[in-house]
Image (cartoon, rainbow, N blue to C red; front, side, top):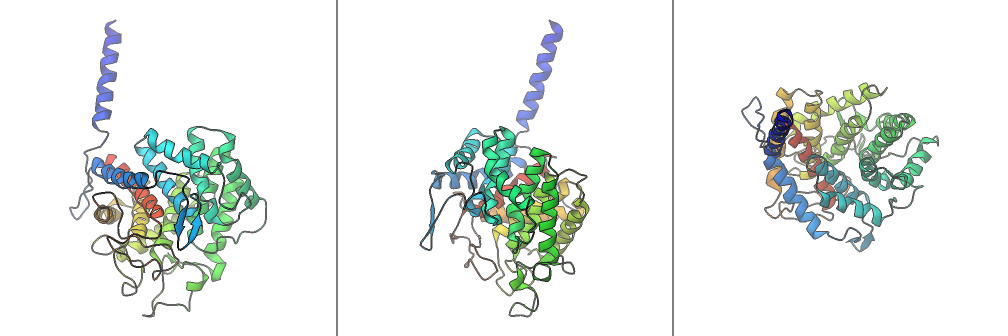
Length: 388
């Protein structure tokens, strides 16, 4: 009886310790003296921004109406939001988050925009959340459509579908997740084929190894330049790739045969991004030319913070060099979130720095969802950093 009572007491102490540390109080200090905020503060920012969104868009089935066009709620913009929501749910599980995501998936019958024969990566993005929900509670119907779609890619010879770099984020993690839940390594090989085609072949190769950055698509490869004669590297576009590499590697085995190249590209991007960060912690929409649509911008900043925080946690990026960048970036994102949860400084949809303007603290972009998804992904990794 004494042993039983002692065991119960120890378990109670352990639970109390874990509960007391739910919001974390440990701080990480960078070489320049800056500190990460507490985990509780990071979580508060995420919850506030997410609550604003869930209250405003309570009907998960409601279409968006932008520029006179009705779009279903499982297009890429909303799908990226749900990536972020699942990241929030991972660090702070709540039934309402799970229900909001599940209701959305069920509303669309776990299907893809434009059907399960689409080769467009934007339409496949919803599959990331379907697969994450499947992992929590497996049921074949949840991933039937996304698996049919991606199996079509695996079983056909085309590998040049990702003609724009955003596509890497929209679809590459889907291959990783399918490989994870099925054990079929063909998904990893097809992801590599498509990634390397975009990297090395499309437009002569959208990856510029010299600068460690990506041109958004063939339209921006040389001889195209900004009006000031500089290379046009779009912040959010590069953010999509940076985040995709992190999300893909997070969900694939350490011995995945192409991992070394992914790590090399990831590190090269991180190194290139450090000197491009603004003094206020943001990155400009136009990375290499601050005089061409410079200014604060949240979505690209969030994606870079996400990737760097993940890289530090994985031991791929040295904390001494990258922790100050993450701290400055997260503080900028905190500033961008209004007291009511609205996320400011978001560039609207487009494909280059000049589109989706103006970008200001109060301006509402054409779609509010994808930038919030990026913020939640960034916050989830910063939160984990705080807790380690």
